[in-house]
Image (tube, rainbow, N blue to C red):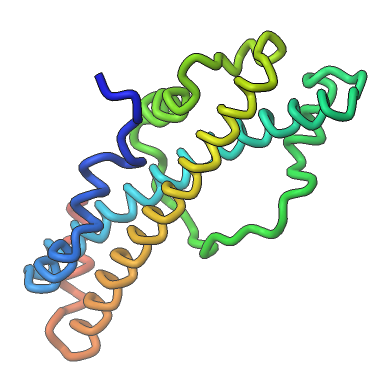
Length: 186
């Protein structure tokens, strides 16, 4: 059993990020390009959801470490409204994409995030030592960085597929009526 969790999104995202994926996709028929774009969109939503879960835990761990360092008498529960308001977090760096798709398997993403802090049960955060919390913060921060990079890669694939779809319509290789008929079947 590996001590390191698999990269965010696992083999499905690995396949999307393979440079050959986009090259091959651009050679596919229109319906396949649209299907692959929907697949990439689903994976981007899954990664985005997972990232939000991960960031929430990271915010809580960091705030608990700060609370302890400052000898803040308030409980972590008392601080939750402040944590959830994202005080101290800068502006979002996402691409502001409108999401119409829901995460495919929220339990799996929560399990993945939980696997990042093995040996440190964050549901019993007050029982953890500072060293355990610091290790959890390092693990979560490293995973967030990797997840964000993978998410940006998936967004680039989505953009590449969307550009190809646009090019096909612009160049007359695709028919809007066929698109509408195809979309009506999904």
